Image (cartoon, rainbow over all chains, first blue to last red):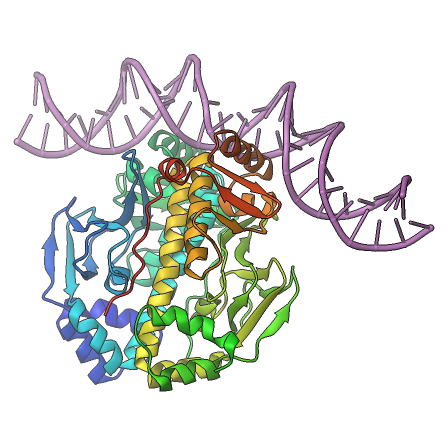
Length: 239
Length: 239
DNA sequence: CGACGCTTTGACACAACTCAACAACCGTGG
DNA sequence: CCACGGTTGTTGAGTTGTGTCAAAGCGTCG
């Protein structure tokens, strides 16, 4: 299996042990990894070509654009995450994806996807599991925007990101690279860019965390978790 | 197949034609329908008993409680919807479910769920599809809270609800029964109950819609859709 | 060097929240 | 039958969090 295609396999493996045969199939599903430039849109909302991708390296975001031009970012896929899984199943994509940094993606052949699910049911279950985890993240995001104020919300966001990145070895306990600027953060957190700035300053002045030069530094994990109402998730799978 | 168990089947059938055998299995998965009283909690957050339910009649909501006691409602399952599908796959339930009116539910035997997915792959695909649709709703909700103001958000909410209810024959073009009070609406819309009241008044005074005595009346669909940025969804499935 | 993208800051406006009170509606029980 | 308490809806006044506008600081890159 090509090295790049292995990211997804590693992830699904945490849910259930996959056989040689299943792993091979998973690998065949993925095209040769392709480089993508920042700003490139992988999927446009409303698009009907049922495309899916697996992010191998780099940062991306999925979002919806409102009529007035503002946008809401739904989430930030990190390496190993599926992009546009839903658009394969539903007829059209209900949101857009674009790449934020130089990235590497494998596209997934959607036409081969459905038969695969039928042929390798365990793989289907694993994918269902991955989709569930993704939905859980969206739910947490929804709760955050609905019932946390800007400060709590931002604290929670960076903690959750830290945890996800740690799982794929892209973060230490207290620091990680984060190429998201304040405009992007604003669209994710449901705030204005200017307010994000104010909030980041507060977090900095209270000695909780710093975002500078694309690097997140968490100074006081405990206090930050208390502020953001963050709870370490048990993300192990079943069976 | 018991009449009550058919709700789900009808829904999945809109995605793909299911065989006799598959339908039968689907029916066997569901327990005898049980009555549930308002306020009853079906699933508690953090609970590890992997239970899932299918709502047959009545209204329910799924939500998360914050440390400070406030809550965010994620969504309102309506008849035919799955409750707690994710908690079967992830180890623990990440949010709570409770019933708002007198309701009828079938519980789904989770231990039989996983083997079933392996044995009836097409059923697994159908369930994956249903899960995708549910996630799309959560995403739309997220966008609403993040980037729409109270008025737009409320308009959008009642339109989306109308559309969903219409699919199961519980709404006409312009009216439906809606037993949600302003406190519940507030927790769903990420607002305070008092502000919901003001918003409802505005909608009423502008001749757009009325919520009175548990009945929603849409006076001007077009204007309401324009206000809420609502787009009729194509919800047909693939294959 | 200037242009550009991103960050930072201040002053002000406004949407939504809080608190407090009251009104309408209900089922219950005297 | 009416009085009652509980729930839900309604309204006003004042506060606060967040958005908007405007402008300046700072790096980087061509």
